[in-house]
Image (cartoon, rainbow, N blue to C red):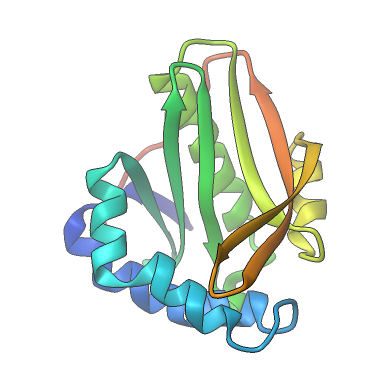
Length: 176
């Protein structure tokens, strides 16, 4: 059973603990030495997560059989443009439909808060196997970017987009 709930600032330690497993597992094979550690501090320090939430990033946490196993973050950038900042599932829980449910929650989030049609976009490393997942979810590659993130590191990404045109059904939010 998969459940999804909106995160609060009290969930920052949980988000950090999930990220400490999933982020290195995802990116260590793809990024130069030192970049994963740099990005963990940049994106997942307690201060950074709190600032993201204060600036309007909405986090959701997924659970499978009442065990927290993934998260997503969506940021509204304009009335009809949203950026899916983060969507990660612990490796042991991948392949169980959790990523699809989190992605659907992002679409519901856009439908409930945006002016339709709206655009949901995300950055994904060009070598990340998740590119196939996003294509399966209906996204398309809009452009290719190399983003300087500091300390001489770059994110070599595709920007992928999905046009959201219809109201999504509300996902039930449950505590677990």
